[in-house]
Image (tube, rainbow, N blue to C red; front, side, top):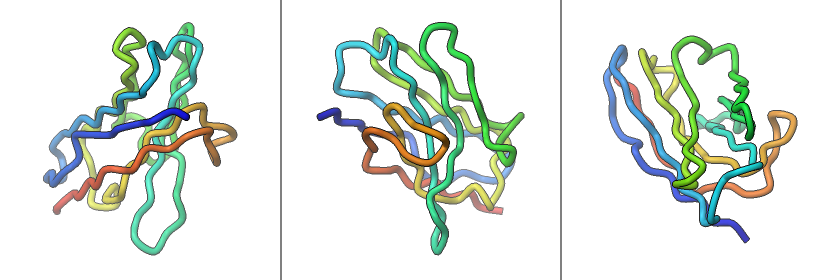
Length: 119
């Protein structure tokens, strides 16, 4: 069982910035792909971004490409999501994902952190 603890959520103004963190209860994230998903009220959970181990190649949803950046610190077992220029439509609960697959599922999920973007 892997525990994921997200932090950094809150209220941010549109055009500002916010950084989410997710710490995993593993010694290292080496060889682990990590990701972020989100779920807005009344909507299904959707893929936001993922980062592979090794070279750290990244994948982003079109809606956040160019604004959000996912990164990782394997030694700290932590993955980050830097949210720049957020928009009101980015308001959602953001979930950290351990070994996401096909932009739909994951082996483990965090409890989620609320991000609210005000206009």
